[in-house]
Amino acid sequence: MNLNLIKHFLAAYDFKSISKAAEHMNMTQPSMTAAIKNFEEQSGKIMFYRTSRSIQPTEDAHYLAEQCREILGRLDSVFEEERKLKICCPEVIMQALPGYEGVYFVETPAIEYSILDKLRTGEVDIVVDDISVTDHSFIVESIGSQKLALACRKDHPTIGDTISLEQFKNAEHIMLRLKDKNVSALETRTEEAFERNVVREVSGQSNLLLNARNSDAVCIVSESMFNLAEELGLKVLEPPFALRNYEMKMIYHKRSIQDQRHAQVREHIKKHLTPPSKK
Image 1 (cartoon, helix red, strand yellow):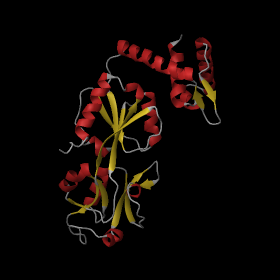
Image 2: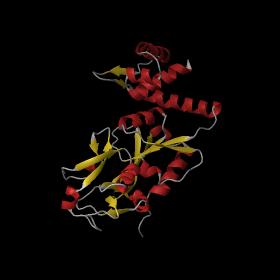
Image 3: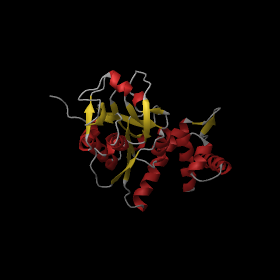
Image 4: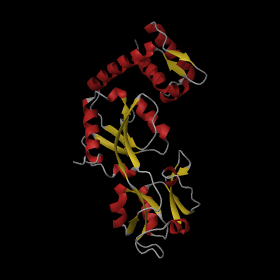
């Protein structure tokens, strides 16, 4: 069987969509459809059945997908140099993780479904973030949490060592927007509803702190950034309302469970992010 047919089959299996599989493989939908039909003819089995919005794998497809991944994995180990594992995580996680041989880190994109697709296809090996995952193809491990607080410059004209709810409402704010949800990071962490005077909108935690340093605005800050906030001349304040912690989850595809190098990297991540147990 042509090796490309196996890759086409796995793309359709992973995406459960002919159009998405074709786009991923850089080919037309008719060509992908023909490739799947050819794969079915050569294997003598039906791989997918159609629903109104997608294609769903049959039991034969589930079995063959596992076998095909093992075959491709062996070929990769024979013909390719050992590649670096790609770890995707947001800035608040990345700056807390030391380097590790054979690994490089990439900041998580703003769109959640995009990074999960990259996990599914093997373009990314591990994601560490606080995102919702319902696809049973992925393993999700809870590895810790980070406290959230507020920050403003130390010589703020109206806010001292504590901040009241009234001061919070009256203050100017710098907002960290979560693009895939079209809301701010603060809105996802509290049940409270606030009419805030947002004067700046940024895309990263360090940008929040840098903008707060040069203004009278208040921003949200994660625990791993507390020290940086203080180094930048900011003070970290307990919020006058409840804020849910940032939950750190390590997410990876089931196909990587038994991979020794992958497992070593997972342990490295947990070692540096999981808080020590209390005795």
